[in-house]
Structure formats: structure tokens, C-alpha cells
Length: 200
Image 1: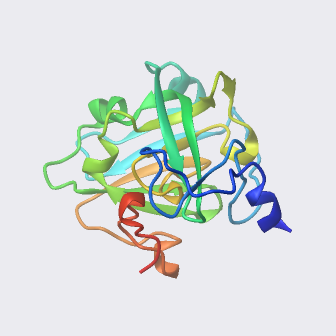
Image 2: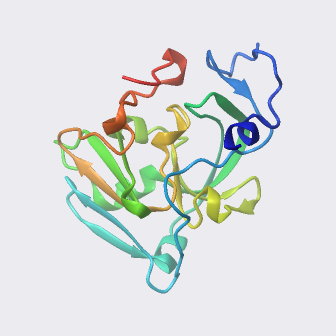
């Protein structure tokens, strides 16, 4: 059962680590959870688009994206299903770096992440402008695996991990918020692990 696999590697005890939000348990594994099948990646046709409430819309090829300045960020991640994986080193392009290129409009307040399989999730622009938010393609010194979002996923450590879309294809800056895939199905739109904002 997927639930049995999800619990593999858990400590079995409520954590006392101050880095672990309430209701979470630490795992040394990286459980795989997503809707739909793993998409095929073709580096010749793949693009990343940034559009909406920006001064300059952007479409990057895979080669263009890899040419952007890279950075690393170490952070913990917390899944709404109850697991936390601590001290992960991500490598990729800072969300802030893309914003330097497109320049958000003064009215831009939210960002919708559009991923393969029509998956979407939104978050405040201010949350994505945090220094630890990356568009990541490597984890702990190795390329991401396809089941964890290769070739590109968002990493927003301060929110539950469904707010970090796998298989990212575009970022839409918005003046008003819209609910994404899981938010439309009852997940809390704020998604703060420290407040246990799991469901509406």
C-alpha cells in the first residue's frame, strides 16, 4: 500500500526538533506523491514561460534556463500528509533571479505555478520572493529524478510541499489570487505548516 511506503523511514515518535512543525514526523526517505503519470521530458521542445502581470514576458528554452545564474539553498520540506524531510540541499535558479528579468508590475500580488498534467498551485508573490525559494533541478548533489520533478520543480520551503510544483512549465503573475488544483479540492490556500493549515 502507498500509505505503508509513505511511513518507511519515519522515526515513529513525535519529533522534538524545533525545525519540525506540529503534527509532522521526520523521514529519511523522500516519499513520492503526485497526481497523474510522470511526464516525458524532451530538452529540444521544453520551455519555461513567465507571463501575466510583468513588464516583460519571458520564454526560455531548456538551454537558456541552464545558462541562468545558479545558486544553492539548504532547507527543510514538510508534506501535508505528515512527513518532513530535513536539511536538503537544492540547486537551481533563484525565483528572484527570474523576477529581475521580467520585472513584476506594481499590481502583481500572487503567482500561479503551472505544471505538466494541468497541475496548478498559487502562492503570494512575497512568499516566492524569499531567498530560499528556487526553481530546482538538483537535490543533495544529484539531478532530480523524474518522480521528484525532473527537469524542474519549484521549492517553497516555508509552505506545505504541494505548493512546490513538480514538472514546472510556467509562472503566471497575477493581480488577484486564484485557487490551484488541491486548493479547489479543499486544501488550505495559506498552507503554513507551523499553523497546521492543511485543509479548509
